[in-house]
Image: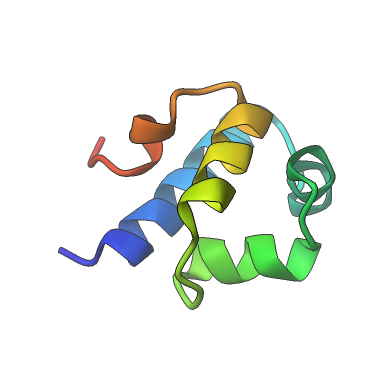
Length: 69
């Protein structure tokens, strides 16, 4: 299983559930929109700090971004 790809799929899923755009998520997580896009496509390997900031912005627990739904 590719954890980086799974992380990206989950970020996109929870972002859309919240009705957020990539721009809105990036602003809430203090990141560039292009970085969020790269994460969602699985082309960037997120740091633990980035995982935490995204989870906070999405108002979910960080582990939810790493598990299959």
